[in-house]
Each structure stands twice: as C-alpha cells, then as structure tokens.
Length: 416
Image (cartoon, rainbow, N blue to C red; front, side, top):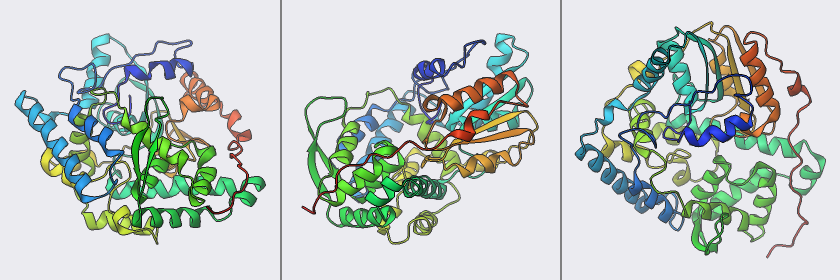
C-alpha cells in the first residue's frame, strides 16, 4: 500500500524488490483508486504546475495560498465536470478495494505492507476487513485515529529534534555545530522577515531557476528530508554564514515535477474528508506554537507539507468522514511496526502509539533514518523479510548495533 495519498504504487516496485520483499514470495502491487494507472486518474496537472511555479514564491504568503486554491479549484471543476464522484475517493473505499482484490485473486491469506499513508490505509483495512490478513507490516506510521493538521507539527518537532540530538551525541558534530535548535530558530525568523531570492540549479540538472527561501520553505525542506539528514547541520551552519546553497538546490528540485504523475485529487479527497475536519486554523497555530515556540506565526499557521489546506478543502468540498475514519484499530493479527527516528513527517513515537492496540505487534525503531524506512535500511528490510517468514517472532537482532551515520563536517567560515 503506497503513500501520499496519491503516490504511484507501481513506481515503488524497484524499492520493494531492492529490499528483497519478493525473494521467496509473490509481491502483489495494486494501484490505489484515483492514482496514476487507475481509471479515472485523479491527477491534477493544474496543481503540479502551481508547485513548479511555487519554488519562486514565498512559501506561506497569502498570495501563494490563493494560487494554490485556484489550481485546486480548477482541478476539482475539471474532474467533477467529467462525472468523477470525488467523495468516493476515501480510505474506507480504498480498503474495500484491497479486500475485493484478495477475493478476486482467490488468495486465502496474505501479508499486507504499507508505508506512510499506506499505514493509515493498512490499519483501516485491518479494522474493517480482518479476514484473510495473515500479518500487517506498517512503515512510517499515520494512525487513522490521530492524523490531523495539528498532528503534523508534533511529528515535525520530533523528527527535527532527533536529528539535532544525534548531532549532539557525535563529538565532532557537537563541537562544530553547537546550538542547532537556536540556529534553526534564528534562520526561520530571519528568512521569514527577509526572504532570500537566489538562482539555483535543480539537483537533476538543467538551467538554474529562481528560488525564494522564506521561513516556511526552510521548515518544509527539513520536514520533507529534502536535504539529507547527514548534511542538515552543515546546511544550517552555511545558511547562517550567508551560503544558502544546499537549501536553495533542494528547493529548486520542485521546479521540475513530472506533470500528471501524482494523484493530487486523491490527496485532497482523503485530507479534506478525513484529516482536516474537527480542527480549526487556531488549533493548528496553537499546535505549531507548542512545537516550536519562538517561530513566526506566519510559518506556524501552515501545516508542514499541507499548506493552505483549510482553504483548499473549502473548494474541494467533500463530506466529513471522520466519524467512520478517525477510529482506533484493535486487533491481534501479528503486526510489525517500523519507524525511523529522523522521520519529521510521521514522528517515530506514533508507531509505538499505533502498536498499543495491536496485541501481537513488534515495534522496531531504526536510528538515523527518515520517512519510509525499508528502502533506506538493509536492517529494516531484513527485519521485514524475517517477519513475513515468522510474523510472531521476527529476527530484530540487527537493530541493536545501529547508530546514525556521521554528520557532514565542513570547515568553519567567518561571517560574510
């Protein structure tokens, strides 16, 4: 079960094969309703084009939000005009599709693996259609009963602070980059007050593009793991000394999306029906202030990775599904719960939280890894394959010796 919501599951196959998931068993991958190879496909080229343009705009300016909302409405109007029922694209229906697939394929029992939104989907599937599930593995966990816009700030704080704590635990990093959390707060405040406009080459090559770095853009690059965690202390230190290069290049990557590949329509239908209702803009801001006191309200008013989502949901206009979806999964099917300590999208503690009501679960924390653990950690991949062989007693021996990789150390420079 792929993430997003809206990601292309078929595009994940190389990662899964690389992790050895299908070494001695069949791997079944189904594209979720509304995604790339489904009919209809809820791609929104309008939103892709907005994102390409947005790298040159202030991240959290009201004018940027209006452009996003306009693109969202254009996509909604086009899909609705084609007769697409956007309220049918939700996690309840999505889970039922997987239950139907098992029956259609004549498989008596299967193992289920999902990452990111796929864990929200996997937990919903287990709750609503437990029959035929031999085991459930969830990686980078989004508990359906807790996911909301304010929740994203909790995850951001946990992931970012864990990276900083890991630096402090390595003497070379601690000595070279003291007070990272203070440095980050200073840079978020500075860039929010005085955004930087620079030209940067996208990592994939091509002509340099105009990039605007404000406080919101900086925070979202960190949450998205757009700069590798090992480089984050160096990138922040360089930024503080007048060199925004690493962050600017990471932001420039957004200038060249594959138009029409990601199903933003599924994202909007799930977020607006299941994640947004029940919490106000004030609740979101309060959660941001708790997570990062001292940061500007203009940054904290937007949920990491989901900016202007209240406004987008007003135009997307699907029914509130929280009564049927914001529900805890309680089950004794053997489960594996994997989290990376550096994950700032779905904080690692939410894995343990979801596991509390999965009575036969094994919880594994992989140090120094961000979002979507299995493709990034050979140890996590071997834990998963051993879990598929023996769901009640996976071999987690490799975890004990793991530590985060050494952070990048660049020579100190004078203030420019």
